[in-house]
Image (cartoon, rainbow, N blue to C red):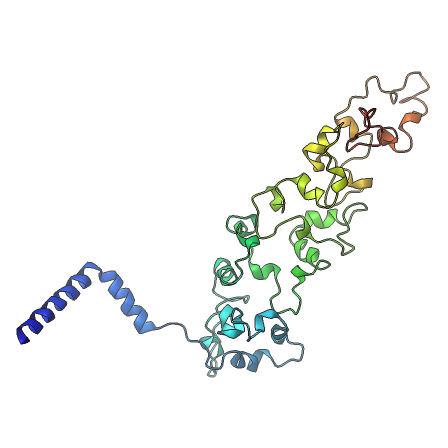
Length: 320
């Protein structure tokens, strides 16, 4: 029995020696990690943070307790686990008592001076928020531009502005300045009135479609609200079935019906004026004399009123 035990000990020693020689880097790294140890957490969790960050009645830190993130009864929430440090990272070094002249170390994540990268901060959010709407985040326009979840979302607010229809556009136009100018124009969707949000048409967390639309095509996105323009029609207007934005500016325009140009200039981009009643036929007509009566009122739509399509047997010219 003693002889067998000696043989087993010798074999074990040889195996450990071979493993150490075969993987010296791994052994060394493990030893270093063991010596350094993981970053320390605070002993009292959120109570430690509130000693400094909760001294005001309307503190933005205290407002976290009014949000779903602070529901201790729900095991999925941060406050059911490591509390503040579940998102911000180990704060033991940040929260320790300082000596005279000693500088406080920054909190790991979600602060102006935090060392974590945007990608690592986003990974914290994605660890819980695995909604189907987030599956195309990787590679999306926002992800490529290094946009962080906290750049748009206000986690400590009782109601995150990105989830409020009337407030969401204010967040989006802080970056999308061209669209900010367009929604201020005279005609367009009721975004300024708080009756429509950017996410009604766009998927901010990524999409496989152009401009991160929440439907496969521009037209299908528009048809969610403008169902009367869907068709099918007996007589179709080709640009309508192709792309609504060929004639309309979705974010706003200074022309009625949010058109890209004022008729008849819009129509004449495709339709020649030759042989049309709007062409002057005598010396007293356009362009040298009085305007043509055919172009007054609604311009082209004064006659061709069914520009999106017609089902009338005599509507080949989209006039009925």
